[in-house]
Length: 168
Ligand code: ADP
Image (cartoon, rainbow, N blue to C red; front, side, top):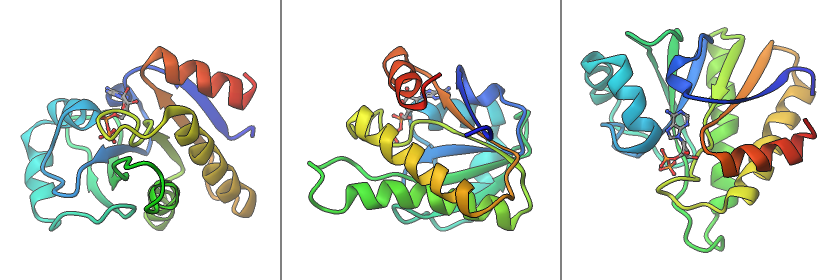
């Protein structure tokens, strides 16, 4: 738990080794946090993403971060919520897990996550937070690689949910 940080703010302003983008499968940019990351990183990010051939739901790909203060962007695709009976929970856990695996493969020590799938993709916020926290905690329990994992929360509702679940 001491390597987990909760923060409310804009993920594009974070000085960490990698920020995670809640992208869509095309990786060509969208709204929400994806749009904010592409605006702040500049047009080269889209050019780099265009070479990646998209990304499957639950998987993750990495680019440098161009004008952002972080070093890398890990683009992961969370599931669209369709009621929870078609694997959405497992896919959301995979998005967090594969982002951590990719960050470790690139020897990155600090990483910040947005609340993947809880915007346009409509995943229930509390359930998403439970899955996010459990997945990260399990990873950190098994592995001492990461120095700090930040949940960068944007909206007040998610912030309250994370405060309650993390007991901070
Ligand atoms: P998805 O399509 O995965 O649902 P969204 O971008 O619509 O992705 O929303 C995911 C989460 O990102 C939401 O909880 C939203 O409040 C949050 N968000 C939006 N802009 C930012 C930002 N600049 N920094 C961090 N989080 C953000």
